[in-house]
Image 1: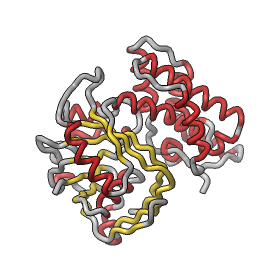
Image 2: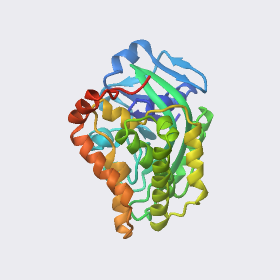
Image 3: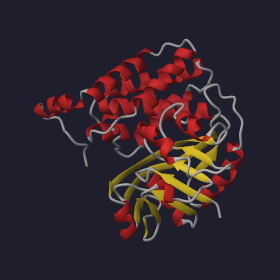
Image 4: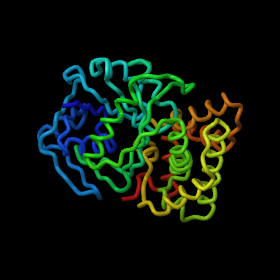
Length: 328
């Protein structure tokens, strides 16, 4: 039986890894703060697909105690990629593939630097999910994964990743995961950025959930302007995205359950936020193509300032009666 490793058992890794384990896949979870709790109480997932509880899962606190695995689902935030040289080497063998389930563009580069070209894929996750307690995940909406092989900054590398994705997709689909593959990971990443860039950033800058952003005319118009700029940037970088996709994102966000982006939750909790992977990497790709993206650059500069000065910003917000925590 093929083995899966899940590195980062939070809202994303806990959901997908939990579904795989429920379906009978051989899944091994690396955990930190939740490890002892999950060893004793198991993993719980509340989901619109059906709630479930796994009383016994394979839990590890040390990556060196884990078996070598055929597929490593990297579900850490990209702000933790500096730890990959310590996490990945003991898990991989010659045919392993690392699937990077992170937001942003070229987030696979850190894993590629450790395991080598041809053994890394990316997964764009369209998921609304939160971790609400130790070993407890709440899945709110969506859940699709679109996977593709990572071929480097110039999108030309080859390797076994695409062939390996075939069996991984079959196991994920058998587990109830809406999983598809693509030959063009950069295009998939840019399409995902058309949501991440406006709504992750605006949720922090405006201190608002997605439904509030969409309900107020000015913030709604701003979100649409950003979506259009990201699409145009992608097109100018050589990744054609149909104009109709702009309206589809607006419609999907209107239909989404009220949701706090992961970036806003991280910001409010004092954790690092994914400014570089979502904004910095996209802007650097635009620069390589001599493309100007003024709204994206302003958001990038604002978010970098806010991340550096968040304690003062929180004090200022609270003194004027703004919420210091996300709404329940």
